[in-house]
Image (cartoon, rainbow, N blue to C red):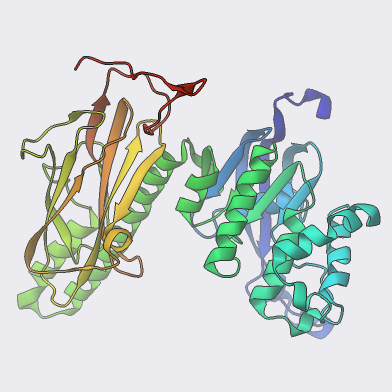
Length: 446
């Protein structure tokens, strides 16, 4: 089977299927099994219905989907915690799984002793563990507690130690399942940096997460699994937008059904109005004229945009700017609720999905915007360092704890032009010297 594998791939999954027996009320004793034969009946639930994908050497891939769609099952099959009903999995090299962190830890043994136990589960010899021991302890930041029994650790300390072991085994393939929120904020950032480092060294990574921004930071590709099949695959930003749009449609459909039920239970004088509202919300809403045809809109609409414009500093609407030319994003909003505050933000993405820039009022001013019935928020980008390319503007209003009031992706497409031929996302000011002599800047015509 390995000989049939594409040389570029570290993982190949072919027509993978997996199902489980679901017993509604299975007897646990011999007496119950004999007396209540009907309890032995079960329902067969197919979690994976024939998925196929491959992952190249050094590639990072994210798996997303709603709860129960099969993404975590896929990761467990890859890690051989369980086995498929049919289909084939071919993998190359040493595999490290950040799935059940701390599996194999003994509570009465010290952190140091548990490092040896856990690392040996990943296939390391004692000499290899000896060589990595200090790095693991240093990464965990548990030096003063490392010889204490693990049962005395807090849950955060426990997870830190487990993550530090798993991330330091020099694996060829790393499987990660919803565990990147380990410890405090500084330790989480440290974990992200470590993930980027091992990816740069050529490690192949597969991540399961509901935190889509995490996937966009690390992965080149996202696979969306929906009811056991692959629904979409490609650049993370665009797959995530497709996924979010579907999730929003489902939310609106549920909301519509709830409104309809309320309408049917209300007085006849109010019944017609409520039913119309439920029907309208259940079918979604048309995008307003200030949105592009590619826009995706999500949020609870407690605060909502009524107009968004991209302009130059003279107030003229434009969609083409020169690199270095300032631009203005004007956001009008309305709200029927009192006492709210909003975190207004913008995001800029290149047309290949690269996140070029993003900011909001909390980042820039450490404050929220007090919401009125109608208002306007304007952000002026004075130092436009974007390099020539096609871009998309996103706008959003969130609460302080991240609840979406109104979030519109791809609201305005625009383009940056320039005569200079720099490479990348943005231009960084620089100067060059040769043998101590300053080189003259090349002059470009407008």
